[in-house]
Amino acid sequence: MALQLPRGAEREYIATSGIVAVYVAALPAGPAYVGISRDLLHTLRALRHRWPALQITAAGWVQAKSDARLICREVNSRLAQGQQGLLVANAKTAQRKVENVAAHMGIALTDHDTVLIRARAAVAHIERQIAQAQATGELQWFNRAYRSWRLQAKQYGRSMSYAEARARLRQKLFRQLLSNEVQNEPKSLFPPLPGIDFLVSG
Image (tube, rainbow, N blue to C red; front, top):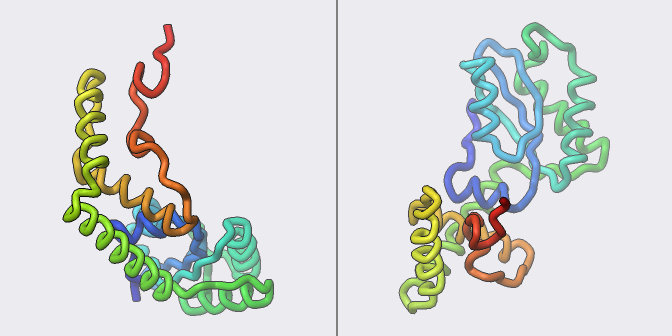
């Protein structure tokens, strides 16, 4: 059964948090694949260039990329390799091996459903903050910064939709939520422009 993958703002939050998934993917016929990823949707799209019918069936999340690599390397060394770069084992066997290896190494695996629940709660919290700031006028600084950047960017053939700008704001708020980071200048939300945020060479 295919795993429900994070999308939209949930995907942004997980990427911002820096956690890494050890995932299991498989073809309908059975052969599995074990890898690591910070963005499961992006990874699935890449994998399907090679195996169009592949589905991600399970994922456990860890804090450090080095831990994810250790688990993945150990699992792939213990399971027999099949054809076309896939394992002989099916998805369930591969998933159990991932869980057993992580437990043996003393590495905590957070269940994928738990990560999704946390991501949805964080997104809802940030969206409420943004909506409240919009209602009270506290978001005016952001709207002014976006308008200013957009006007200046036109001179260089650059553009950004308001939806993209809001996504940048959301990611900044995610970082603050995760690390209590102090807010920087508004212009740091947007890409630098020649002659404005750095000097033009030549």
